[in-house]
Image (cartoon, rainbow, N blue to C red; front, side, top):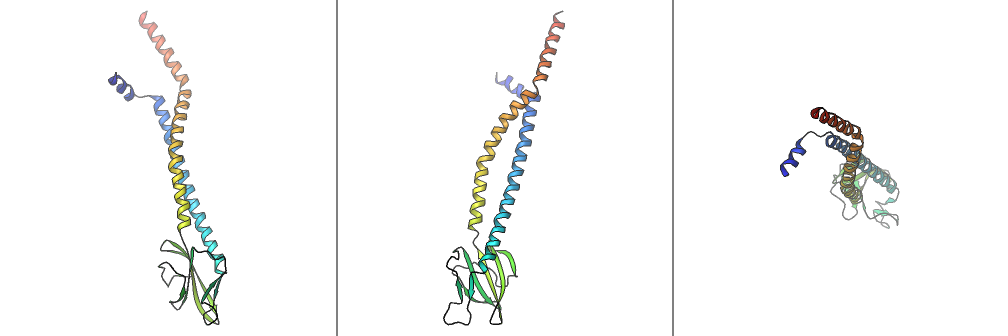
Length: 195
């Protein structure tokens, strides 16, 4: 019995090949779509973080030559997950605790360093040029992307099983006329042999 089953599985079977082809195509499309959505989500989160850093520049006050104020002061709702550093000619004048290891010579504008998204701006205080760096903590973006990947780890296998079942049913329905023709040909062949 086992030998017959193996021989039957090895025989070319149009139904099985059609079902596997439909399954493979659908799973490839599903994986490519998931990858595209991942890339779009990552880009969306990075752009959102860059825009947030741009808005936060306005919430930082610089008082270099003041005895009454700290060198860096922040609005009361300044987030804890953004680190700030003030530089003058490559020398650190002030920095929030835990500022990541970002080079002091970072170019102006947006960049990535030490897994952080960094915004470097030039500003003037009393006619002197300073460099202000804001570094966004990557944890929020990483957690969102990790949650997306974890959801895909569940969704893709479930979808693949569902597609396999539907592909099998679709292949059976598509090949039903072929099966009727095979049975009719077999019946005619039997009649011819018996005559």
